[in-house]
Each structure stands twice: as structure tokens, then as C-alpha cells.
Image (spheres, rainbow, N blue to C red):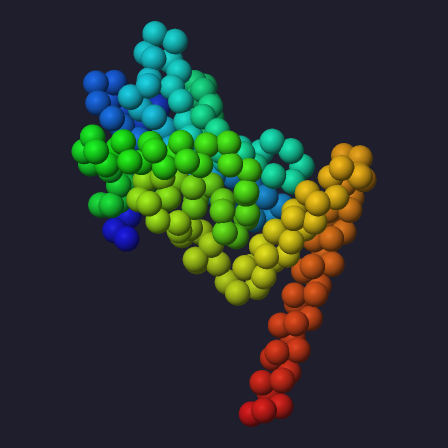
Length: 208
């Protein structure tokens, strides 16, 4: 995958990617922070929907809708939000597999319609990076997850397990109780995974 990244330093620079007279789906990624680690939040800007008179367009992304899950939505994005993202650290990603003609753009938009309102968010297997890559290429892939260390992936799996359990018990927990329970389950899952990793290492050492 030949992907290029362009750091956006001004809103005017970002505007150069918008085309009101033809299809334009811009893959953006902005720096976010979770706990002590930074990550990239990915979204697609529909540049052809830019309204210059009110300085608003539409983006496609996974957004948080509750303590345990996300949802694929279309959201209005104005100049102020873009400027905030630029200040946080915004890049535009381009790839030779991204849509180049009307037919390919129509297929990409159809893939968004397929995923619209999806709430099957998974930190490891179905996050915002997976979503944008799938819409633009038809393939499910996340560079962020692929570059993670083994232990980091284990932690993500533990978090996903906690989310699943949280959703299963959502009807019987208050929001506050669910939050406390979810945190506890995260640490329990992480401890279990780390114990399994340690056991595997010890078993390999004995065999050698």
C-alpha cells in the first residue's frame, strides 16, 4: 500500500483538497490521546459537500455514542473544528488505491451506506482506521494496529473483551456502576493475558 501523508498546517491548505464540482473524499487523521498513549483518529471528509457560505461540510467516521461503543455516522464539520484538528496535528493520507473516477467513488459511497449506523466497534478489529480504509479501498486494514507490539495488541483484545461484557450487562447496570465494572474487567483481562504470555514463555524456555 503506497500511502503518502501530508501534514496540514493551515485551513487554507486543507481547502485545496475540497472540490465542489466533483467527487472528493479526503482521508484525514488527527492526533488524539487515550490514557498515556497517542493515537490517530481517522475520518473521511466529503469535500464536494463544502458550503463556502456557511463554512460547513460533512465527515464520515466512528464517533462515541456511549461508555462502551461507537457508531458510524455522517457529521457536520465546520471551519472551527478543522482548525482545532489542525492545531492538534492533522494529516491527509493519499493512496494509489483510493477512488479516482466516478464509478470508484460511487462504490466507496455504497460501502459507507453499508456501514452506516454500524455499532460493532472494536479497538483491535473494527476501529476508525479500519472504517476509512474499507470505505476507500474495499479492504479492512488498520496501519495503527499492524504496527503495534504484541503486548499492545493483547491489551486491545482485553479492552474489546471488556466492551463486549459491558454491552451484555448494560441493561442491569447503572452508568456509574457500568463504568467501574468496565475498568475492573479491563484490568482483569489484561492480567489474564499477561499471565498467559508469561506461561507460554516459561514453557518455551523449559522445552529449549
